[in-house]
Structure formats: structure tokens, C-alpha cells
Image (tube, rainbow, N blue to C red):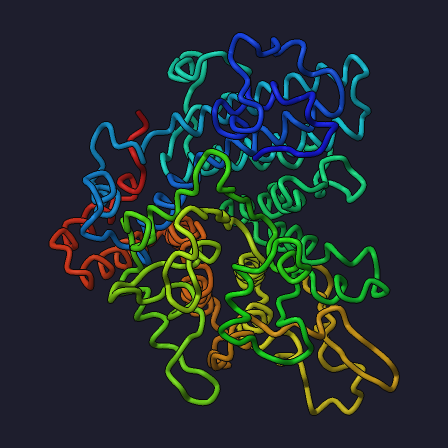
Amino acid sequence: MKIRFTPYIKAAALVVMLTGSYSCRNMYDVEPQNQVDAKNMFRNIYDADAAVIGIYGKVLSLARQYEVLNELRADLMDVTPNAGAELQQINTHNVLDGNSFADPKPFYSVILSCNDVMKNLKLMYDTNKLTANDYNQRWSDVAALRSWLYFQLGIHFGEVPYVTEALTNVNDVKDQSKYPRLKLDALVRTLITFLEALPYKLPYPAANTMITQIDGYPSKLFFVNKKCLLGDLYLWNNEYRKAATVYKEVLETSTPNGPSDSYNYFNTYTLNSGSDNDAVTTSAWQGFLSRSMQDREFQSEWIWAMVFDKAFAPENPFINLFANNGGQYLVKPSQTAIDNWNSQIQNDGTPFDLRGPNNTYKIINGQPVIVKFLYNYLSTTTGLPVNALENNGRWFLYRTPTLHLRYAEAANRDGQTKIAWALVNAGIKGAYDNTAEPDATKRRITNLPEPYMFDARKLDAPTIRGKYHRNLGIRARVGTINLSVAFQNDMVGMEDKLLEEAALELAYEGNRWQDLMRVALRRNDPALLADKVYNKLLKDGNPAAASVRSRLMNTANWFLPFK
């Protein structure tokens, strides 16, 4: 990510130092002998900002590995005949030494950069180069990003060294006498304790120098959401009320400004089509992925999204992974994923789910292609590259349906299954519109204590516009029929449906492996995960299906070898 605005130019060398050749080489092209020593680069707030941006620039180099580990290991993605041995090993859970996708070192490289920046931000604060607010906001941001990286390592490797020191050599992490390994459950608890103690847990405020335009992109979307991350960790730790509480705080992000800021108040993270009642169309759903990041509609849908720009390294990795025109076409939607979408029913009785064909994937030249990440590269009508040199793209990490599904999972386990049912189906107003209640002011409102209070009322006499009156629910937003009302009183059945809905809505956004792991571990039911991977491989004709299922029935085999 190059940085065009003047105050940051003097920090260019620091960005290059932190990101190697990743972020700014074409704009600044700083030779090593001309770089300023690190100790002289943390001088003022602009240097601090450049250091944080540099860390996120380095995170971009993990996108390919992140996507493969979180999706190909699960049930919605399969390899194509073009895939090499490494991807085939990931797909069949038979990873051999030297597999680059199973290498933790790239994650630790970014973690050690986080540690270095956190150390230097503290030195800046101690020497009065940063105010307390400026320090707390930036240090907490990098600390949360480091926690997210560790969470990813724990999910995939199961037992990892937890290093918080600024080291000069990533190989030092191997010293177990200094850095003993934490198992996943202990790591999750450690990260929760750490994040709970952060001095600043909100997004950067609008007036902060970190909130600006970087290469024409709004930087507000680049940063990890600390409360979403904390909620995810609570969910893994089976602390459901705490998870629901912090997720609800994110849902209420726009509440402090009040309804005078009507668009943001009623639309930010509330899951709607942008109007009061209408389901989205196919093209509108594509808009969640393709429209300008400057648009308010994009910013009310996405909580965390990063960008690849054609002019700068690292290059967009998703073109080679997914595209069969201009890319290597290495992975594709599994038949299981396609069958999931084809089994859905629209409100008019049509067997269809617009999130699937021609949206998340498209048949191009007779081949199923994952296009969710290719809307800035391919024509939405022909499926061909608009310009083979235009390899811009986005890395989608966390959006409103992710938040709603995770909140619903926490609420369901906390005894609020009806709320979970409502958020997945037609929204709060549909589930809580008690027509037997003659007083309309008492309808379409949950009347529950937080974090379960939702007001979806829309009345003209008296005039009432509840914050969630536009909330459609995940299925209603795309016009699919409601789940049976029987699930309102079936916690385990509802949890199964949440997993199914996540597969339909969030496919290839980096959630599937951890979703399956989390629920299977919670239930102490390895077959939940093993069967889904088995069925994927079986439908796709992989002869290793049965042996993979047998291996995955032992949870120890869910983790990659840490080497």
C-alpha cells in the first residue's frame, strides 16, 4: 500500500523497513544502504501511523495461506486438476514436511514486526512523542492484530509458542526453553485476558490521523475490529453471554450518534437491503462485494476488508487461486457447496439461492469458478478479465452477516434461540410481531435485557422508528424461505442451521474451518467435522475420502505439524 499524502512521505523508509518489498517499493524504492536506522524512525505521530500501516501491509502477504488453510481444509472448497501436491495435501489432510501452506514462519514474521512496533510505540509514549490517547489507540490496534494472528496459528497448528518480545530473528521462536508452546484452549484464554486489558477497544475515531485515504481507499476498513475478535474468542471459550455482549456492542456502533444520522443509525451493521422491506437482487448482492469502498452501502456491510492494488506488491493472490482466465485455477467450489445452494428454496417456490450461482461462483468456460474475490478483475457478464493487467482485488475478512451469525450462535447457546432464529430468517420484526397484542407499540420489540434488546418497531402514530426496523434477517435479505418455527425451541438443531447458513452466506471468506472446529469441539463430536470433509471428498470423487474421515475422527489430526 503506497501512501500518497504528504505527512507520511517522511516515514517512507520506515514503511519499507517494516514490510520488506511488500508495500511501497514502487513508490519509494529505498535501497538498503539509504534506509534510516530503526531507532531514528519513531519520531512523531506520522512515523507511528506509518509503522501501523506498514504492519497491515505485511499482513497482506498472508492472504493466500489464510484462504487455503481456512477453506480448503473444510468442506466448501476443492482442488482442480491444476493444483500441485501441496494443495492436494491440504485438501486430504495429509501434509508432508516442506508444505509452504503449513509453514508458521510467515505468521511469526508479522507477529515479530508487531512486537517491535508495540515496543517502539511504548518508547515514543515514554519520551512524550505520543499522547496517551494516540499511544493507546495505535498500541491497542497492533496488539489486537497480533492476537488475531496468534488465534489463526492456534486454530491451524494447535500448539504454538506465544512470543511477545521484540526479536531480531524469527528462528529464535524455536527455542522452547524461552518460549514454551501453548495449546489452543490455553492460548484462547491467554488472548482473552490480554484483549480484555487493552486500553482502547473501539475503532479509530473519525478525527484520528489513521482515518484517511490510502491510495484512494478508506483506511477505516483496514483495521481489525477488537470487539469482534474478542467475541470470537469468547465463543471459542464457551462464554456465550460475554460473546453476545461484545457482539451487540459492535451492532450498536452507530447508536451513539443517534437517529439524526439516519442512514448510519438504521443501516450500519443492521443487515438490510438499504430500504425498509425489500430483499436484495442478484446484482445488489454482488454490490456487497464489488461496489466502491467509498460507498456508504459498502461500509455498512463490511467491518474488515483490505485491498490489493495493481501497482504494488504483494500482488493479488486470489486471481491465481481462483480464475480460469488469467489465473492458474487451482481451487474451485466443492460439489457440496454447489449442492447447498441448489437445495435452497425462494419465497416463490423456486429452487435457488442467489448467493450461489453467478454470485459466489460462476460457470466460466464450463468450469465452476469462485468469483467472490474477482469482481474487480472479471466482467460480471462475460466472466472474462476486464483487463488482464488490472489485478486489483480485496481481501474480505469480516462483514455484517459474520457478526450476525456469530451473535446468533452465542445467543442460541445462552438460551435465546428465538433471537437466533429471527436473525437468520426474516429479522426481529418478523419473529416478534405478535399480532395478538392490540397495542402496536408493544410489538416488534424483544423487551429483553441487554445484550438481547432489539427494537424493530415502525409506527407513524405515534412516530417510532426502532433501530432495527430495517433488519431483514439473513435469509429474507436474499429471498429464501424461513426455517421451520420448530427451531425456535431447538438449540442444537438451530446451531446446525447456523452452520448451514454460514456455508451459504460466508463461503470462502475464511471462516469455514474454524466454524466447524468450534462447534465440533464444543459438542465433543469429531464426526461433525469429519463427516463434512468426508462428504466433500466423496462427492468430488476423491479416493482418499474414507481414510481422511478416519484420520479426522481423532482431533489431534485436525492440526498441522508445527515445523
